[in-house]
Length: 315
Length: 297
Image (tube, each protein chain N blue to C red):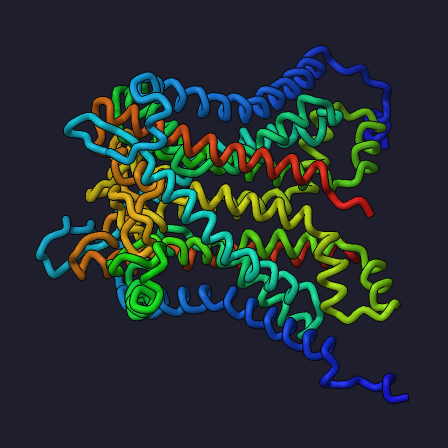
């Protein structure tokens, strides 16, 4: 009994305890600021390392495709073009499939447990390391699509995108593997924003006689559009920065070609390939390319953040 | 009267059917890659699993028929991921505590949350480039260039946003009544956080951190020019400051070798990597579902 009474006695906090409280708060403050420090650190370090190359080639670096360590001539046009083409084309395929899957998961065509299984399969796909996807692409996808690429070239060769003889590893395979990597991102974000659309809207549309898909296209998708757009932008950022799977399957050639059936290059695959062995001004040029990649993905990401903030659902 | 019945041939019904099948088709496309991939890895990688794999060093690529094992890479992945966790978890949890408990939604915390999201979107190879410039090329750590330690730091940059985000969100879910009760009986802020809020958010934070670690274990791009690769056993603490192999880089290097023996080793490494990552994912999914159920009661 006596012991308990002591517990309830008035007790002043010791000075040391107050200090610990303040120290704890400030420690967490410093730790959270580390995020900003790392972020700015990355931007500054990559920028300063690329200065040498930047002052030598200026913006010409972005539009020439010469990459010759022997003559010390560098231009990253092929890689920049490859980055943009592979990410945009893969996104073009991913958007309808991903949103379609998200609709499948949020509608009730099939019993709930089936939808949950599909949903978790898609999320597990996101957990597969990209280097394993690359391995799979080299040994399974490439032989699988070989005939199809020959067919593409024979029948659609007049389109510049398919104008070259298909080679073992090429940009189109990189696009296909990117689609596999982007699907989980687009699907899970689209699913979340579709789930947030209030039931009232759907019931109102059904009530005035709209069919299911009329409701989806005219009411539910527009209501979820901002979230889906943000997901698409995040996927775009991911596609531009994706390294391993693309490096393993794109063929890594700096020779510029319009054709998707010939080997290509992306900024990240160029970095992965050359960074380890580079020296002299090549390093600085690689940093310049890395800086371009970083600016591209930062812009896309910041834009996605703003979009989410500005157009978040207002129901 | 007829119009009250479902008419199959009505254009809206035909259209609806079409789109329904289309979305089922989309869902099939989305799950097929995972099924194919996992089956292939089970068959191709599972066939390579034997005791030697876990014990031996990999042989350098060549005409050797026997590729050896992946012991150094397996240990290397564990070591590098551990280093990354040791750095990222305290920093991330601490930062998350500040965001959720101390900041009152002011401009600073909004800026940091924004920064967390942006950092999460930084391409993983950029983290490698950054650490290369900061640590590898400057030889700042005991004069060592490529090292497992540098690789661990690069990975921690990728883990940091995940850990902060899950801590922040996990703490936000803790009901305010708990905090008021603790503060009301005279506990200081740090006692409240360490003894009350953090333990009650522990499960959701642990799930998120676990997923972050699993993701980091499979990352390759930040390691290829920070930790590089090594064929030799990791024997002691000093090896931290030398080149270190990892499963992910082993897969990358050996997938591109022209020799069948090395390719098989890459499949075996993928099997181990994918199985451990998938089991962590499934385990944390079950844990999360379990938490949700207990909360509802």
